[in-house]
Image (cartoon, rainbow, N blue to C red; front, side):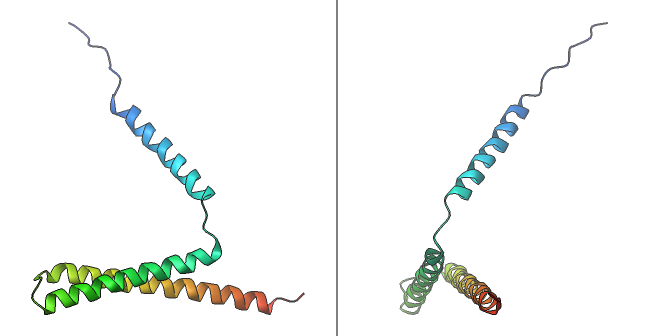
Length: 105
């Protein structure tokens, strides 16, 4: 009777590397914070870009240059989500402002 030894599982080394890269990415994200004013301008620019893409898709679809309704719907949803994000950022900023104004000195 021959007993075969238990071998090391090879995939575990790669899994531990993934965890290390995630920690590195999280540390990088913590160190690269945007200035407060850039958060608003970035969200607004994202919305404008998405809205321009939707307008372009609508124009191409209505003039017959494109028949891709699927991408139009996807881009419309992206623009809607960008607008919702911008509105939420604005609402949170207003809440913070009102809280600061309401504080006693």
